[in-house]
Each structure stands twice: as C-alpha cells, then as structure tokens.
Length: 151
Image 1: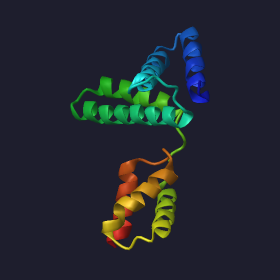
Image 2 (image 1 turned 90 degrees about the horizontal axis):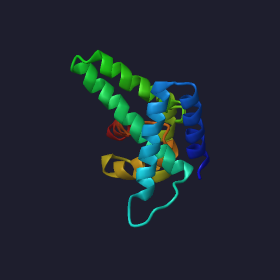
Image 3 (image 1 turned 45 degrees about the vertical axis):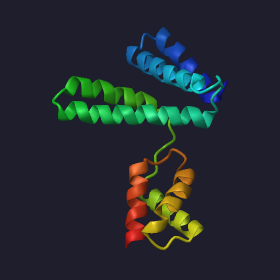
C-alpha cells in the first residue's frame, strides 16, 4: 500500500475516534475514490503515491468548483461545507506554486522545448505539467504558457 494511502487510512481512524465528522466524511469519500480508481480497468491494482495524489487533486478541484457553484447559486451553507472538505484535502496535497514559481517553471519548459510560438503550446504544456507535478492548476499553467508564447 502506498504511504499516502496509509496516511489517509490512519488519519481516518484518528478522525473517527475524535468524532470529527467533517474529516471522517471527507477522508471516506477520498478513500472511496482511490478504491474506485484501483479497481477501474481490466484488472485491479495498487495505486502509487503519485496516482493517489492525482486522485486527491481531482477531488479537491471538484470541491473548489462545487463551492463556487453553490455560492453563486446563493447556497452559502453548502458552499462553506464543500470548501471545508477542500481544506481537509489540501492538507495532503503539495504546496501550490505562486505566480513567480509558475513563471519560472514555464520559462524552463519553453527553454527545454525550444518553442517560439503558439503552435508549440502543447509540447510546452506537456513539459510544464510534468515539472509542476500537481503543484499548479492546469488553468494557471495554460494561461502563463499562452501569455509567454503569444507575446
């Protein structure tokens, strides 16, 4: 079992013992998503830490989008709940890069690929996403790559 999945299981047990309803519900949800990912496909397999991180990032993104949707629909109590779930998930995700970090990462990716314009955006994005490794949202990376290649 991956170390991250072990940590999630252990933290779930701790949250259950401490009667922390929010953390318990959130960790159960993410562990269910991990299990679903493990049994998806033609054969069951054990996820690596990187794959578990991707599941966590996907679930955290869902929570951010749901919180935005609830708040724009005037459902503040649901938006707060979903945002709190996202906060629980953020404890397990790597620290996100700031704008300067993203700019430096994109500069490296452009230098590596030798890109000169928008037609090479896909190649730059591939390298940039690999370098970011879950530390930056794809939208932010894409916007910076587009800004650099267009200008």
